[in-house]
Length: 407
Image 1: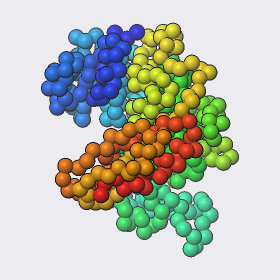
Image 2: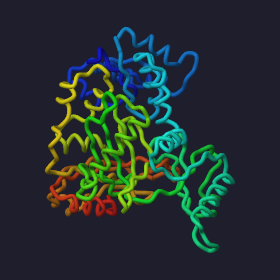
Image 3: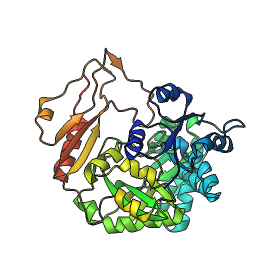
Image 4: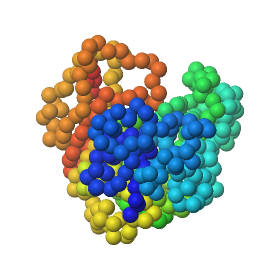
């Protein structure tokens, strides 16, 4: 077992999991969190993680962590992936650990590695301005044998290193490129639209093998999901498992957890979207913990440990023949109006047998939502459901996406 885990970032649920396990840890995060950490006796190293410089670099941080006996670094959010990779390169004496971390932080590099390894990916290209996107869309139209007058091939542009949907734009026409793209979007990755049913996996890896695979059913990306997967995706579990292990092999991933997103076509072909190696959004690991009956956050941390034993790994995860009887899902609530003054919970929600609870908070006064939101913006809370029928779960999540809670 690791001597001490460095938790790179800030997550109270992860800290609570480590406390319950009684495992040694130290949190490495921004100075703003230090007063809270001291007040609550949380081992803490204050550090500027937003930039590399002469005074803020992995060797300097390595020295600061030596008194704690740290030998494993764990990235809790997107911007700490390189930091954890750099530290683990030192701890393991393997510079390729840092190189692998860069794969998760540069979507163009990620796509190239996946393509070289034999995964199905869309057409992609690095672009530097609007004209580059237009040229890419034109080449897609040609490749798809588009005729004059037919709609353009859809193009997605994404920042190289942002998490989730931040900076992601879907462009359906040449006109969209002029109207939706900003100079600040570039340089970025442009890629073709991938067909198929989108879902994610949470694959816990140790010694290069997938030790446990969760499949998350996306009802509506960025809004609602549930765990475990419904009947259709479950029928494809073996196919999905093989592709996830192939991804792990291609990327040379040895420890931790990856969160790949896939598109499953009607012909049972899996298209690779992208992957991350930190805690996913959408409260996915919380749902996984509830459904599968294990502490997914603790498992996320412990899988980063090269010295964990097979017996300890077996104790972390559900048995291989177990599948949950209940599905846990949530819908993330975003105000549908720009201006609102109160929270209204419909009585039908309180009477719904699948309803568990919600985290919606009433506004203190009239509130206005900014027009300039990154990604989907910050949701105002979640509504949680639990039940035995994945089809009913899907209906509920779709329905409550449309309900206007903030009026």
